Amino acid sequence: MAAEPGSSFRWGAVLRRSRLNADGTEGSTARQERAIQDYLKAQNMGRVVAFYTDIASAYDEKAKREDFTNALADLKAGRIDGLIAWKVDRLTRRRSEARKLLTLLEECGGRLATVVEGIDTADPAKREITEIALAIYAGSAESESEAIGERVSLMHLDRARKGLVQPSSIRPFGH
Image 1: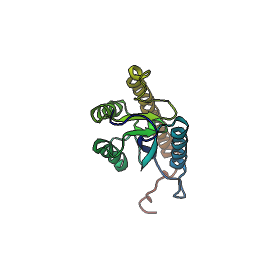
Image 2 (image 1 turned 30 degrees about the vertical axis):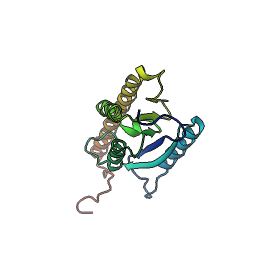
Image 3 (image 1 turned 90 degrees about the horizontal axis):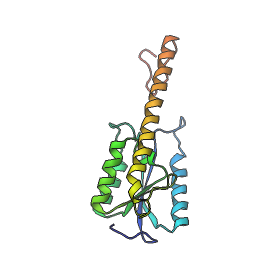
């Protein structure tokens, strides 16, 4: 590991929200930030030196998550020692991405922690099950994203059958 766990450990906190509220505001990432700060303080695990906040889907492979990409670059460059997130699904909603993230952490000696699931790659007692747990949580998030997509598609189909206007941020042609 690049740095030993403790009060001087430098974390990069990954915060994510898939969209803004209708009024252009959002509070989700602020709540995640507060929970992460409280967790690190209670566990004496170091301090957050950078926040990476994307308003993009962790499921959509085409989504531009520039801050997440910057977090990975900072980890590789040694500007941060590890990544922390409130939940695994804030990092990724794909099993394949979870494996890539673990590989990167192994290559650069970084550490990964989550508040809700209690994942910590620096915990020797959990070392053998960390990859399995991460795959399970990411797989669960992937399944949930697929289920949400199916429900939303069904809702749009139902609205179209009823002749209702489809909700969109883009004004329909002719209106």
